[in-house]
Length: 339
Image 1 (cartoon, rainbow, N blue to C red):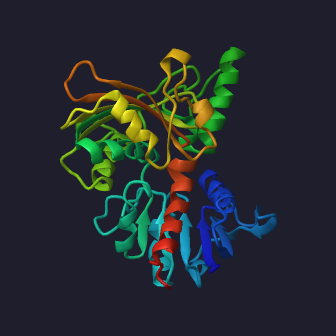
Image 2: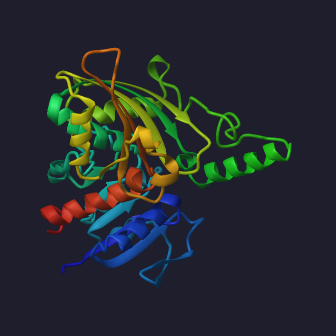
């Protein structure tokens, strides 16, 4: 089997570590592997297939001879993305830097795999909340054409990185021990609380996270006519995002038809048995790659509406797994720069 040289930028962070883990789990044909990050993480040793690799400082030369550059997030792709492409690597970027660039494909492999074929060196990984939602929307849109989506998210603290996890842990301990709480990562205490505010506020008092879900959904599904409105909420859960999604379609779909569509769609696991109290929860979705769907029911307030509950691990399917799946598509379609 042909092998491909891979560099991970931001290798020491949560998504970078997950990328390394998933490349191993999915047995991606890695030839030479390079791990890169900022000077703060340089020198750290990480394991891949039981072999040690030292994290190096990212420079333009980090991409010499590389086929695929996996950027874990942040501003690194703005600084080094062009250098990677100039040296022949295809960039798969987990940040928001290129997502709405019309020249850059925004890809969820179960939804719009063919879009990788028109890349010009950079492919964007969508926002974690968008990824799990569009996987759920795709079979419904194909069957009945979606008119409108209303979504409320319940997003885990790990979406804010390791610091978010530490803040929840520390604040929970402080509350239980009646200690003092000083928020640092989130604008208010997150322990035993919900914060309806993720990222900065923008037009019409929607947050940037909410606008991402609107614009990215339309781009991935190739349909700007789909009306999308979102409310994104940070919740005191360590891992895996949940979403309450209301879908209005042009043709009526019953709950049973929707369930059949979900069950036959790749990457979806249906857990939907109210009588047995079976439904998706973050507790069961964490460290899994599938998108879990349950609470499937018709909207009693409109003729052509559905309500569903969607849960997925935002570090895996919402970030690292989706990126590695894109790399697999590049290999499958033979559209790497050096092919």
